[in-house]
Length: 170
Image (cartoon, rainbow, N blue to C red; front, side, top):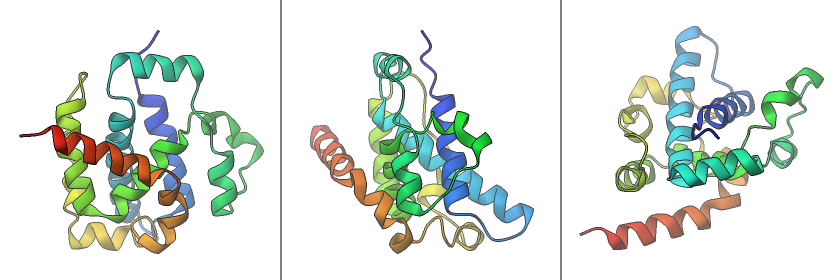
């Protein structure tokens, strides 16, 4: 049984970029992908902090993109169905929360360091402290109003997790 979150991270990043595309240009697309991947990686680490959690995810399978597609109006192509089965709705929702609020992303990154038994979640500067170019590359991906219908799905669970974890810190 694998303890790897790579399929969930890759599929969830791809979904976010399809639902909230970057403006034209290779640099904008690359910056948007970096920020989406950082948000999804952090969200997945918070959602599945232990090896056992990840193994259960692989055993039971993620939720898929059906509800998210419906909420955003995405109509997947017939050849898009395989990777969409690896999308985890909660991870996408939490990633949307983190993208919309850099201060929350910074707080979550500090929490994840204490929770994750597998690896470090460092290198999240584009997510937690986006520069001007990062912000220009993600007008849709970081827009709180556009993300709200997705972010609101599981925000209470994220806030509860972060609240509980911050209470445990010195």
